[in-house]
Image (cartoon, rainbow, N blue to C red; front, side):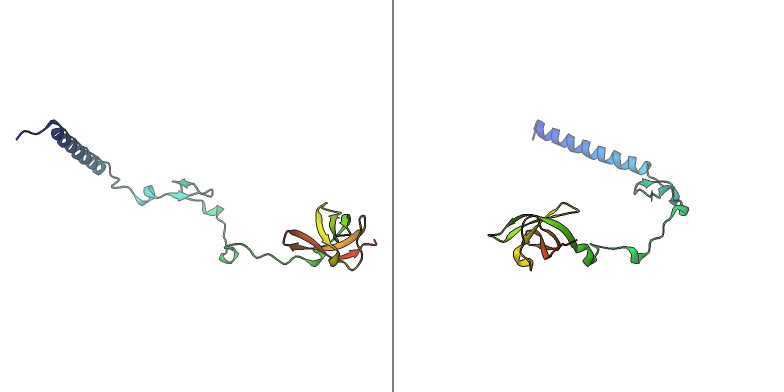
Length: 149
């Protein structure tokens, strides 16, 4: 029975593959790193996190205590009540809807204000001292007092 040309070609390709594979295997065996010392095979990491073949200098070593390592988000300290008290001027106030905005005198930040957070009637141009709280849409002025100073 005669073999077709394609079949012979496939068989030759398989033989070539096996032969190349065997050559690579033999090459790896010959160039294997037998006889290298442990020091020659070691890799070190320098202070920048890069791999290097030179060992680190122990004089530059920094000691870190395990207690000093924080994993995750650090807890926030509660703000000082004195930092929450601010001074500013009411730049806009709608008396029919009873809301407006206070411009902080230091940061020039505008903070929403509602009449219900003050014991005194509010109006534009009034100098006030106030505290800020986080509201659903941003910061809100609360505990508003007339600033006489």
